[in-house]
Every structure is written in C-alpha cells, then in structure tokens.
Image (cartoon, rainbow, N blue to C red; front, side, top):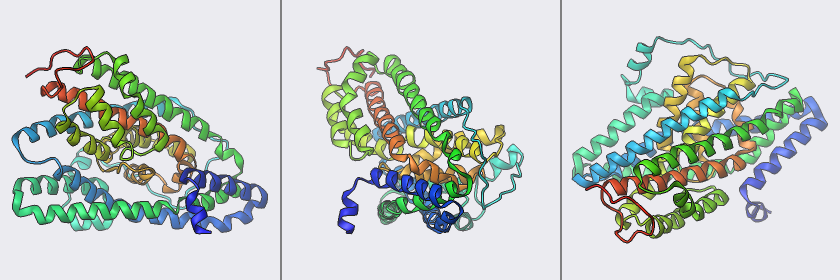
Amino acid sequence: MFAFWFRIPFWQRVLGAMLLGIGLGVVFGEKATVLQPLGTLFINAIRMLVVPLVFFALITSITSLGDTLKMKRLAFKTVGLFLFTAMIASLIGLTIGSLMDFSSIAELTTSEVRERDIPPVATVLTNLIPTNPVAALADGNVLQIIVFAVLVGIAINVVGEKAEPMRKVMRAGAEIMYQITRMVLQLTPLGVLGLMAWVVGSFGLETLLPLGKFILAIYIACLIHIVFTYGGLVHFFGGMSPLAFFRAVLPAQLVAYSSASSFGTLPVTHKVVTEDLKVSKNYASFVLPLGATINMDGCGGIYPAIAAIFIAHLYGIPLDWLSYVLIAGTATLASLGTAGVPGSAMVMLTVTLSVVGLPLEGIAFIAAVDRIIDMMRTATNVTGDTMVALVVARSEGMLEADTATEAVPSAS
C-alpha cells in the first residue's frame, strides 16, 4: 500500500489531498473541521525545521566559498550578484503582489492572534544583533539567527584549518536538516487535507477564489524577472544577445520546470553553461552547485513577497511600509538558505511570515498549488544560475576563446 502511495508523484498527492479536503468540506460542512489537527501537525512540523535549517544551511553556504585570493574574488562577485538579483526579485514580487487584488469574499480568522507593535526603525536595526545567540535560536528570532549564522560562517573561513572540524559538523548538520525536510514534506498531503477540509467546512468555497490570481501573480513576476533582469544583465554585462542566451539555456529551463529541482537540473545546467555558454568548467563547477543552494530568486525573492501579501489579504491584515521593507529584506536573506530541492521554499516562507507577524496557517493555501508554482520558481532560479555564471566568468576572463556566441572579449 505504501509503495503504491510513494509511486504517485508528490505534486499529484498534494493536489489530490487538496481536492479531497475541499470535497469533504463541501459535503460535511462544519463536521469536516474534525480534520484540522492534521493541518496543525503539519504546521508544527514545518515550524520545527525553520531554525536549524536556516542556521546550518547559511553557514554551509558561506563556508563553501573557499579561502584563496581568486576564490574570494569570485565568491564576492558571485554572491554579490546573487543578492542583487534576489533583492530585485523581491521588489518585483512586492510590486506585482500589491497590484493584484487577492481579497476573498470571506476573510479567514487565524487561531493565533498577534499584536502588531511596530518598533522604530532604529530599534529594528539594533535588534538585528543578538545579545544572546542561544536565546535567539530558542526563541526562533529568524533575523538574529541569520546575522549570527553569517558571522559564524565568516569566522570558520577566517580560522581556516583549525576550524575544519566545525566546518564538517555544519555541513553534516545541513545535510541532516535537508533530509529531515524531505521527510517532513511527505506530510504535506495530510496537512493540506486537514487544513483545506477545515477552511472549506468553516468558510465555504469562496475562500479559494484568490488562488488563481496568486498563481498568475507568481508567473507574471517570474517572467518579468527572467526577461528584464536576467536579459538586461546578459546584454549589458554578459556580452551576449539575450535571445541567444535564452535559446542556449532553454534545455536547462525545461528540465527545471518539469522536475522542480535546482539540484536535479544540475547535470543539464552544467552542460549548457560549459558547452553552449563556454564558461570555464572550473568556475561552472563552483557557481552552479552554489547557485542551486543560495541563488533562489523565484523561491526566496518573488515567492515569499507575493505569498506574504496574499496571506495578509486572505486574513484581512493590513501591511504598512515597514512590513514591506521587512518582507523585501527577509525574502532576500532567506534565499541564501533555501535548499534546491522541491518543496523547501514552502518551509522558508515561514521565515518571512514570522518576521512580519502573519499567520502560518495560510501556508495551507500555498501548499495546495505549490507544484504549479514551484515549476516556474525553479525555472527562474536555474536561469539566474546560468546568467550569473556567464556574467561573472566574462568579468574574470573565464570564457573559452572559441565561444560560439558573439560575446564581447572579457575584461582581464
């Protein structure tokens, strides 16, 4: 029985659970709310992952950059471009999300009411530094955890060989958390079943109307980011026609779209980057695995920005200017810790929601259509990886001389 269940593609299991939950809510009405504990179990399991996943993944990403002079320069350019495009992605997400009307006929109510005490900007900045890192980890203060993890990762690189045991521990911790994440994500169908049955049974089908607009908003934002942000950077700094670039990377985009996994697309991405874009194999072997880990414009930039606005509309919670600043900043930083496997962006969404005080129960709606969204998010991420590989390689003179594209000679 279980073997048959796991042979069904994950997205089909989640979609089937969503439809079943909707059906149970329609047929049984209020009685279907008895399934709500399944959703609560799922939300609690995701909450369990956030702190250790962010901590270990961020440290591992930073320590993987190496410590030689050229590697430092390459790492600086690579990560800097990752962060630059992630910030643009989050701003595009906020813009598209703000322009869309996500309001539903019936507003949901959260079981977890949070007072939104907005502190002054100076207080927000000073609170970035944890006075007690252990307390920050215990309390789940995500922004302080991110700052502390970055400092630990930098310190491990500076110490060098003496810190190698800690580097290995952090890497092992990250791999363990990735595996636990995969295990927890198997509960997604049960969680979606319980929460959708509860929502529809309590509030009716009209609460689901904004989903179509949410999917459309994600696709529009991703396409804008791919065409204008990536295409513009390729044109001005990659020395290549955007049309030629998109034609070259199309195979990687198609595999990414169908598999919804940046890591699963790596073999095709590596082939495209080295053979079609003529990027040095040494640099491609560095930038692509790193990009599959931390370059998540779709999952960590566009997705949480639009999702936060969507959930705020769904629950009738107003967002002020500081909330938008926090969403943009947190979405950008959270992209560094989003693993390149299907579904983990949903886990990282809790980071953004927690920072701005939005109810995590809204994740059930995102999970219900996550596969459809994840395909476009992953195609965006992989396209960004190839763009960064081309632009940085050209700036470092790491393009092969016999490039088939009409690239401008790279600067020395």
